Amino acid sequence: MVTIKDIAARLQVSPSTVGRALADDPRISRAVKQKVAEVADEIGYVANRAAQIMRGVSSNLVGLVVPDIRNSFYSTIAHGLSKCLEEAGYQLTLSETDDDRMTELRHIRELTSANVAGVIIVPSAKPHPSSVRLLKAIPHIQLLRRISALGEQWFGMDDTAAMHQATRHLVQLGHRRIGYIGGLAELPTGAARLHGYRSALANPSAKNDGLVELGPPSSMEFGSEALRRMLDLPKPPSAVVIGSVQITQGVLEELHVRGVQIPQQLSVVGFGDELGFRWWGPGLTTISLPVSELATACGLWFVHQIKHKSVNAAPYSSITPPTLIVRGSTCEFSRAPDGRAARGVSASAG
Image (tube, rainbow, N blue to C red; front, side, top):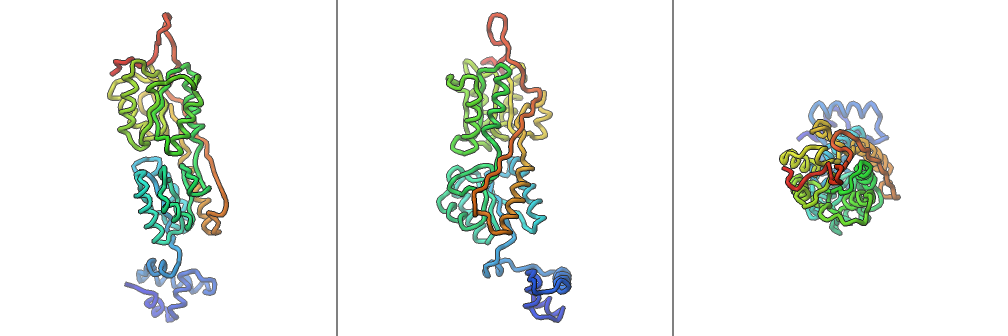
């Protein structure tokens, strides 16, 4: 293994001078730093991060802890953060928790032991007390979800407004039996989106038996099963609004399998704006999420705070608004002359 001593011998300087040059010590001239860097690159020197960590030197790693890397929402965020951090000299490392707090704790412990520069986390519903304690000791920020025990630094979007906007669109088209399929209410995002849906209903106090289905936000299977139950109701909804990207994918798959005519039999508002959503059927009316903008804003702010050692110093929140994109999957709800619904899925659809 090439060491600092090898570089020093090549340049005929002391190992301490090489060490200071590699650490960008201001006492070392720019010319010497450049020569050290050139020789280090030439002979294949790689810094011993383990030794640096033992000396208490923070690494250039920033941990990103997310529930599910299969979700394109999180992969887009990871890509945006990676590019942003790389420009500032940091490297992103990715951890997946599957929304399990013990897995989350294990990853946080590993990141802490690696002396990471900071952690960006989409937390589980109830982080383990040890996770809370460990994160308090290092720079960290919450992304999308906000758990009060983890502090007051957070970047996210207005989930309540997103679902209110989506549901209100259907109400304005004349729909009254509007189903909602979304994430678990124990998650802060799930609770906020459910609140947005309910607040936009024409009659929020009406009994909507079977019209609300909550489950794992990363499960396509749940989306398919939830829609199946709604369509099999004696009085199914005339419209459905969805509260997660992967649940949307499951719902669209089920609609395809059952041969439901969209929007003639059912109006649908999805969540997220995947490329396939634009081409699906008549084009999916959906909530467009400011994913790239959110990731860039979070990354830039976090780097600035790390360098100024002020990440956990004061509360900070940034809320990015979502946008409703209207395409062909929603239409006006009308009634036949005898008062029966002219649009809406029958119990035997599919």
